[in-house]
Length: 172
Ligand SMILES: [Zn+2]
Image 1 (cartoon, rainbow, N blue to C red):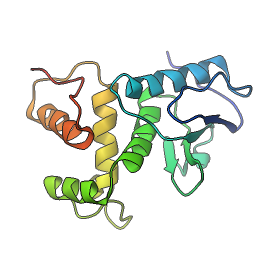
Image 2 (cartoon, rainbow, N blue to C red):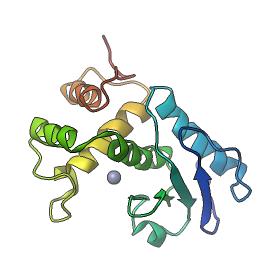
Image 3 (cartoon, rainbow, N blue to C red):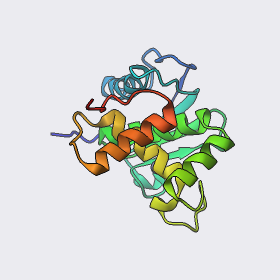
């Protein structure tokens, strides 16, 4: 059973490329969630930038969504309002994508997938390359086993295109 974490907005800084020591304002469960999510990236050799992670049980702090990635702040900010583990992996995936893909790589991914824009809000969620790329990284890192389906083979190939690393879900 998932236990909803009821807290006020809490802030901690994660030093670059490190899992931060337990913050004074985090519960043990929140720190464990952060460590587990970051570990899925480090286990695959994916380096995350310096981030500020906030938790809230009020989705208005995540603009009505489960999580929010905001690169307009320094350091970049992630807000987590949902209890599902994949949400933090998804928002961390946004941070990885934005800190590791340059314009040329983003353009190459857009043309590979036939997507119209990287982050134009006038396009729907699944037409934006930034969302697509974060979803691909998230699903490859937070899924235990992939089916041998066309959809999964495509996700694995997209992950390897984005990261230049072997997907943990590659079957052969
Ligand atoms: Zn997203």
